[in-house]
Amino acid sequence: METVVDSQGWLISMERRWSTMKILPVASVIVLTAGTWAAAYSGGNGTQADPWHIGSTADWEQLMDTPADWGKHFVLTADLDMTDIPMTPVGDLSVKFTGRFDGAGHTISNAVIGWLGADYLGLFGYVGPTGRVANLSLINADVRGRNAVGALAGLNAGTITSCRVTGYVSGNSHVGGLTGSNNRGTITTCSTAVAVGGDSHVGGLAGRNDYSSTIAACYATGDVNATGSYAGGLVGYDYYGSIDTCYATGRVSGGSEVGGLVGRVHYGTVVDSYATGAVNGGGSLGGLAGGSYFGSVWYCFWDMDTSGRLYSAAGTGKTTPQMQTLSTFANAGWDFADTWAICGGTNYPRLRWAIPAADFRCPDGVDWLDLDYLLQRWLADDCAAAQDCQGADLTGDGRVDFADFAALAADWLK
Image (cartoon, rainbow, N blue to C red; front, side, top):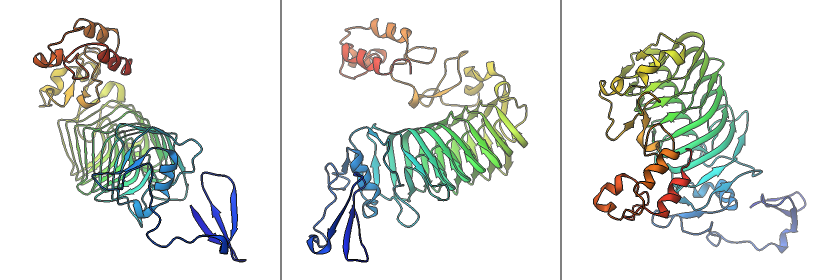
């Protein structure tokens, strides 16, 4: 609720959820003293033990409008469709988001945030050092601004983990599918399928990865287009940052220093990562990295066939068949026990955390082969003693039955 008093002494009350404007004499308004109004949301009290519940678009609007709450704890309790909801970032340069937001596996969809002359734009504008956003899917987002622009966060100095983003992002500088800038922040087990456009420092996941920031076990599949320099399928510019166990598959184009994974590695570190997307543009084009200035790049690869590039400032180029062969990566020390998996001859390595539990068999994807795998173990009831019936006990209740069939159906064709 916003209130202003006009020049005639009338109080104007404007509520964002209604199109009407209510005008009341000041004398008729009950004034609440400090401490008598509590932001209730849909439950909770904002503590770590009992976070505020965000269960409706009205709750999210209240969060956007209440900077005093941006250091509290929240949990999303329902999927939210933000169609036609006026959106502003949670957290900005003056009041950063320093609380905890747990998406709890839920989805926020159709969020539109567009201020072409503004900085620090995203669902969260600025995530501070103690801020944390986790377990959230942001679907079909449309975010457009100037500098430090990302679908989930304009700038992240905290922790973002287990988040998924799809949609479109555009800006000028420091523009990314997940965050415009990862500045002393940590991003883990996140994915983006976002079309990203900008001038410089543009990446499929992050525009920049700065100052001891970490991006680990993440991937980006969207196309990246920069009119200027430093464009990468995952990160536009890695400046003293770390990229570990990541990959990018989208097409990348830019003016200069354009790479399938990273535009430029500047005193940064990249380990156990790969890129497959087509790379085009002006000067300094690389299948993995467009440029490297004292960068440390170890055990990384790019696909020379699909990228159209025989050169990279760092990494090792391989043909498509070699990129889809286990030994290429296993011989480089990649971890295929806990981190990676590959259906040899049909696809590139995938991060295990991103593979649906019902994807039992190669090739990748949940289909009839996986249904057959489940049915071969149908009604088995000794799963606790048989490694969850070789994974077929998707619900972990010790038995393969209709509950597991429903879990497989939920992942069908993923």
